[in-house]
Image (cartoon, rainbow, N blue to C red; front, side, top):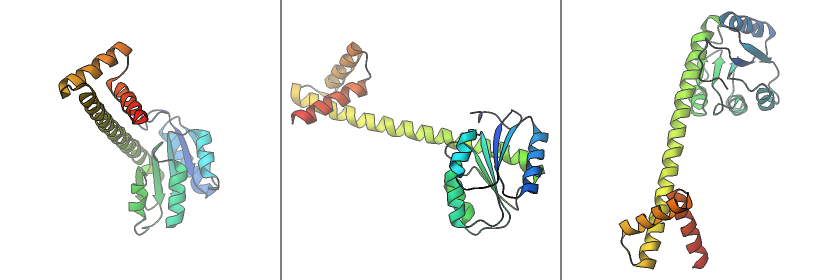
Length: 200
């Protein structure tokens, strides 16, 4: 997937647009901005499958009068956690902008999809998607590190109790065992905690 690129690179773009004339105008504007591979989906039924079949770099959704149910369905189907999604709506849609952004839509543009605004909106959607993906990755890594720290602390406690040693010695034993076995300290700690649970 080419989400590291901005609009100046070649992108695979899926456009969800029911109106044929508007779809043609959008495709023309996209092709004018670069040598992109553009696929138009006119019928939103089975949208998730249709989008996945193209494995796009970005999804553009143009809706005249969205309802909350329609927004939720389109948002889920377009996979905003997998790729940037830019949603264009014709008029103000109450609190739907907030719902769309909370569900992961990278750009929410009121007053419809104007061909001359495509490039800046797509560039912004891609940049915003990359930023949020990085934040999700960092959050997941932080959570994993915290979970590992808890397991290591439990394993140290088990060793301290079983061997009558202090915390530093317990950690040194875990680290030496991990090095001897070519494993990570957290893996050795997890094995010790699991074994202790089976024996108790």
